Every structure is written in structure tokens, then in C-alpha cells.
Length: 200
Image 1 (cartoon, rainbow, N blue to C red):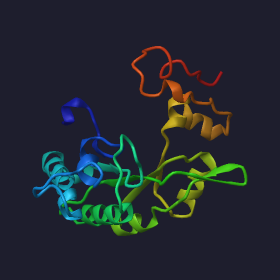
Image 2 (image 1 turned 180 degrees about the vertical axis):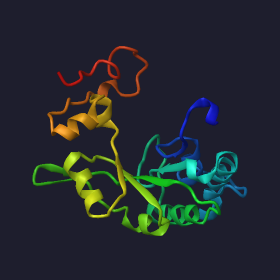
Image 3 (image 1 turned 120 degrees about the vertical axis):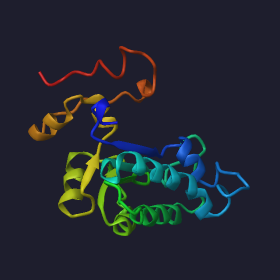
Image 4 (image 1 turned 90 degrees about the horizontal axis):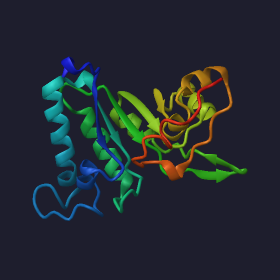
């Protein structure tokens, strides 16, 4: 709703929430037209996207997916097929959507550091539009992903939680606050979300 002052909406079809519970075969045990086959499991998500496009227009809508994640026991036996199907179907939305935002598979370790697996290329190619990658990126890896054309944009979660001025820190290549995972997703109004320091 433009009156609310928002520029757009992102449908959260990731991390074990309702939309993803339909998408993934570990959670979806329905026996109707919304369960069973890959096409049926994706039906609800695509109907939600279509309904939102009809309400606000596709150029104001993004979709976030985490096909490789296993949050709240919500995983899929073939995440590649799921991601490819959704990326292809989202490309086919008549008006089109603004972007597809997808989460990388879990990071691996190499030479003592975390390495982003960068396995999202097939879904970027299938979608064909603006693509956002997320999942363990730091400043260096994020810049590299954009520079090499792997993604158009990179999203940051944990780093933003701990660094309310993350863009400025990236711009200055300043030291980052470490994050405290124990305070994630808590209802404490003081500890964890509002107490990380800004640059001095």
C-alpha cells in the first residue's frame, strides 16, 4: 500500500515459514493439489506471488527462497529441482517481479576460513532478472560476487544485526562488531538488536 510508505514487498518464502512449508517435501504431507509433486508443492507460493502482483504490481515485489536450508525441520529431498522450478516459474509471471533473493547452501571451510559455496548460478540464469544472493557473505566476497556477475546484489543478515552502520563500515573498510548468536530472535528489547555500537 503506497499510503504506508513502503517502496515494495518481499515475500518470505524461506527459512521454514509458511510458504516454505508448502514448498519442501519434508514439511508438506498434503494429498490435495497443494501437495505431492513438485508442481503441486509450488502452487501455493506461486498463487501468493500472483495475488501480490495483482495488488501492487510486479515491479514492487521480490521473493526470498532458501531451497538448501533446513530450518525447523523444513528441508527438501531435491533442493536443486525445487530452486530451478521456482526460478523458472517466477520468470514466467506475466508482469514479472522485481527480484529473486536466494540463500546459498551452507558455507564450507577451506584454508581456515569460511567459503561461500556459490551454487546459485543456475537459478540466477533461469530467473533472468535481478538476483540477490545471501548467506555468509562478507565485504570481500560480496564485492567479488557482484563484480564477477554472479549476483546483482548481496544481502547481509548477521553482519547487519551486529553493525547498524554496516554500509559505512564497508565503505571505510572499518573493523566490524562480532555478532552474538545467542541473542538472535529473542524478545529482549535491549540486548542483541539495539546494543551494538556504531562507529566512534
